[in-house]
Length: 349
Image 1 (cartoon, rainbow, N blue to C red):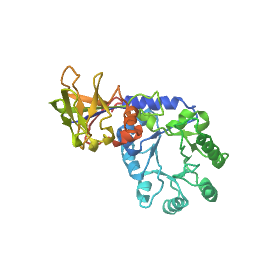
Image 2 (cartoon, one colour):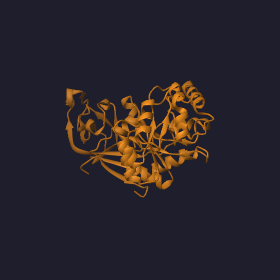
Image 3 (cartoon, rainbow, N blue to C red):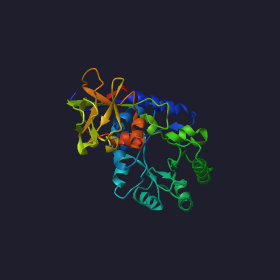
Image 4 (tube, one colour):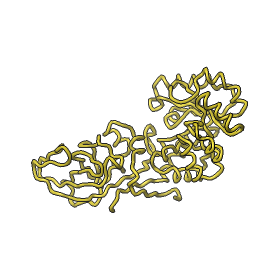
């Protein structure tokens, strides 16, 4: 192996989607968030597997992402665009049958003027203060939009990964106040919201991180395995240093593996001197600084020279690695670089 290998288990993605779907009633439809190229794992592959399993609603961040998913899926499934109808998106939305989630009065006007009669959804701001129509704006345009028949009305929970956070109940109350009795298809929950229980499920859920093995879905199956090739092994004498800025000094005679991956591949410099790689069941500490293309690992205690070391796998998932860097699993996944040799298993890929 000459390049780092990123193994993506599509059967695990499918199992996670089915598990999250099973948490809701038969009346609730489970979609899938495939934005950011399915969190870096390949939206075309993931979307096709989920569509074959019955997913009919897919969510992306921008129209360009929607175009790629439409190309992968063909006609039929609905593709919702969180950023709505941006200037310059009209042709793409119209030609590809994308469904923009309109976020402002400006977007409402743009969509109605440019694509009269075309499908749309509405995003409401229930307290996150990010995207969506605020209550006053919704009151001003709701009659017009309801008459036109939005495909979906949604909002986004700010604190769903903290089940006891009072923000969850407040946003639920606000969402109901803005939408109850209107006869509209509604969506409030991503992965965390699904885990909050039936009150948050409504008509459609849109799991994202849980599909890809991340928290807060604690029982999710792991999806990724990242194996990094060893380029060179050298023996370092006691007192010698390794890497930039002499940041690690050998306390004993040590064998140091130089491994082909670095921050250009999404392995943060914050892993420097903190992260652990694995040779089978044996942990091997990362020593010195993470550089652009290389990291150095202490393999002194291994009985034989390894050909590769794992940084994501059965001993260390995305959230465990994220904790080392003081971040979240989302960032670990979406940062995975394009130099990895990606391979897919399962899912009739």
